[in-house]
Image (cartoon, rainbow, N blue to C red; front, side, top):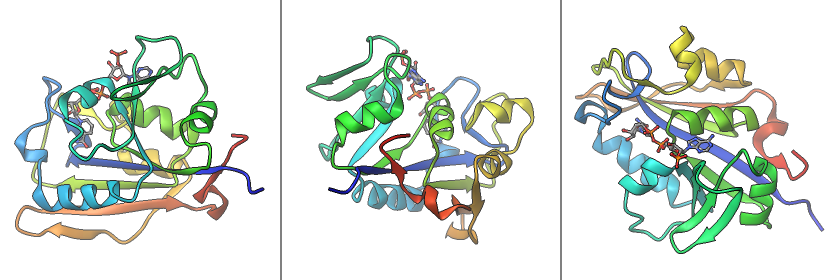
Length: 196
Ligand SMILES: NC(=O)c1ccc[n+]([C@@H]2O[C@H](COP(=O)([O-])OP(=O)(O)OC[C@H]3O[C@@H](n4cnc5c(N)ncnc54)[C@H](OP(=O)(O)O)[C@@H]3O)[C@@H](O)[C@H]2O)c1
């Protein structure tokens, strides 16, 4: 029998200064883009589960009934609830959580926020879709990765985690929104074995 394997795929739309939200912690209109949303939704359609922070879960209705993994510190480890799996990474390692939620393996989307991106950087992304709204500047806003607050550009954070950028694609020329997909430089990282 083949070992269960999972791939983990990150999705973020950031401002020119690598922010996913403004200084109030809200996602401004400057980061909302129709073409990016369509790309994101079509990616979610091919995923087996979506791992997201508790606030994002509560803010976005699950209209398509997708399997959600909700990160929260409010529970001991992992619980199956009516609205999805709730998971506290301090109580259960990522590999153990995946082995329970997706025992046959599968693809997991990670749409953030920042602490959720940081956590999965440590596990290892199989791809990261970094959309950028070049005209948006959000000084003092929430960074896509914690390291960005320490002066590291998002692209460098991704490179340091073993990913390299593909050629950027223009998603919306009128609004200067582009997409860069980062993929592992080591192809063995495309899927993570259950032992990780
Ligand atoms: N531009 C983008 O692509 C993008 C992507 C995502 C979010 N956003 C925006 O960014 C803003 C900030 O997001 P946010 O940080 O408020 O929301 P969030 O990441 O959706 O939720 C934060 C909550 O998730 C839980 N959590 C996250 N990491 C955890 C960990 N390692 N262990 C345990 N629990 C963990 C905690 O829940 P408990 O409090 O229950 O412990 C935490 O309070 C929002 O406005 C959102 O819309 C933008």
